[in-house]
Length: 473
Image (tube, rainbow, N blue to C red; front, side, top):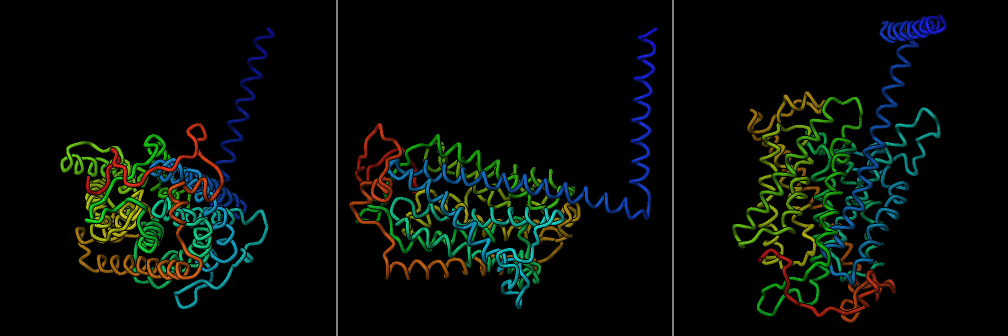
């Protein structure tokens, strides 16, 4: 008898719960109810806030990926220096972006050139209603940090630390935000119809061409080039560390690309993750196979950079291209990387220890122009990015030209401003460590430490040839 009564009570409780759920559902679906509208809007805003916070956390984790890749592809005697650079560019950059960068990028526009309001986030009140505004800033500051940190790998092993700190302040406080305003801030390039969904140009080409200017003015590492013009391979100390860094970057790219919907309610989140994955995979295979056929051996290093090249290339059009086009964009990113490395090293004679210029700069250009070729109106409608039509989808050459203008102008802006900054510092305070400091390693000479103390602070001889492949191997 007791068990029967208990069963009846349980059924009654379940019935009440079901009735309450149905009543609540009926209220939510009621048309014209202001309470319902406020409740629904609040839920959507909270979902968007949570989604953007997850995206920000993933993009922040990319700093660890960059640090590992750059350290792994460099010598052990410079590992601590590179780790510190990846910490300092984000930390100092966050403060500068908070103070002036965010306002320059997203403030009230002055002629489509730069923002003029919301410095120090003064327009954002401390209120429970502004949660999305705060997480939006958090998300954007992660992108500023990513643009800045690209340069550290290209100037590894010979740049003064204080020079890097000055560079970080300028790029995150001024250079990146101003060109970012031209597109993401609704400036003059955006008004042309330029498409760069998550930053192949706005982030990666800016970082890549800033790296080109810095590495060119800085000069190659000791022993990189011989008198006859040939180049030597200077090995990184840990391919394992670099590989883990690439996996972290790949993971973070889902926050970078899918997070750029800026809304957890966007129907294209999963689709964007798929196109991101396809381009990264095809970029890896493309770079690996091309290098294998040309040099007779599969290169782990080239494969790792091939994945990053595919990720950079798809970032502009990930929300506007079909899956097959994403694969094709990644496949072309491979030769852009392989032959780009040769161009940079053998023709320009620029020493880039990690391949940042080819990965981020050249593939940033390629991926942005690819939108003008492969943008599908159907995909754009599905992801709420607009029905942009590329050349192969009936759009003609107009979008190609818009993409070309936008990416060239922003890249040139980064190259000239950063080139001017590094030239000025070179002529005044000097940008390069001494020969002795470079041979000792920057860990010891700049920071008074060693990353692997069990091996002792040894100065490696320059020009030693190992298995680490360069563009010519």
